[in-house]
Length: 206
Image (cartoon, rainbow, N blue to C red):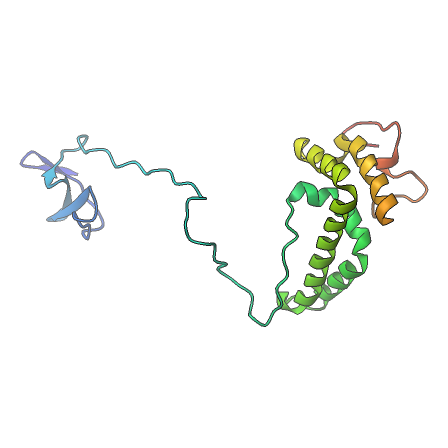
């Protein structure tokens, strides 16, 4: 940076700035660039402020969403389950029981090949099975299901903070759908953690 006839020149690595496209552009002056705005030179410290960007809501787009990586046309379409994390977590153990055969088949398929396209058919079966159970839960136990997942949503999705609505949901699901919550890998000679009547709350519930 140096002075020429009282005008501050600022060195730059680029001399291709276009004054017509940028409110503050550069013009080459020897090996330096003079910053101008509205065809007027500005000494250092006197440059006009850059225009502020305006906020645009993500929902303001008038164009429909287009999937950038759509599946090939020969792959059958399957609707997504359509629930967020809390409702899905509330139903997770029942999905595991209701869709065990499809889940096991999908995991065995994933071990056969690292190619994601290899198990698309098995994945569609898992999705359809989970969506089917969610519909049955809403039809049979909508009130208790909503109470449980809303409790999870409001308590950092911690199961131990929502045992009361969970027990009501478990009873309703067992009575109407015949499914029971069972934690995989839990000791068989001890009660399940969600069935304890006087649990001990530490870092890990016991």
